[in-house]
Image 1 (cartoon, rainbow, N blue to C red):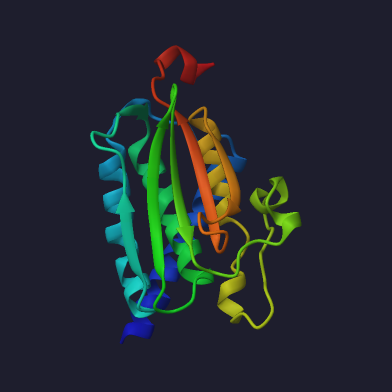
Image 2: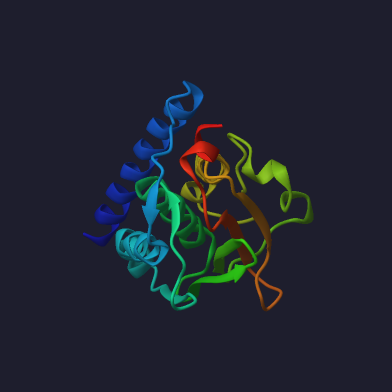
Length: 195
């Protein structure tokens, strides 16, 4: 039953990613610029991915600054960003490990990250190619499903950039695993989004 649930969640995510890639390619990926409570975005994404994480015995630790400043953006798209990042961590982190979601205010931006305890990134993947379309990270001995289609991080980058932000990849805080970090501006106006 859990395997069936995991498969259906992965299929749903795959379909969502395919639809989002079509929207991006066709230029129909406009961002609705509204006040967004990022703590609610993260909470919803954690709830949506909880069955995937639970099946592998993975826990999520969330450590966000309080109060977390609001931003202007598109809450459903930002939720999709975190769903993709959490699903990515689920695929690459070992069973029974901890996935961490954190954040910090850095000047006029907020940095949010998802960190796993997986094998980490090869040195060549930490830059831009990791976020390109159809780039898949496949390591030695990984299950076939782990490879994915190579759309998730490309979609994450596209959504984050449409919000005036950026994404970075690097090692986890303890020097192992992977930390995918997004940077978003704290205040955006409608004029900036339209530009």
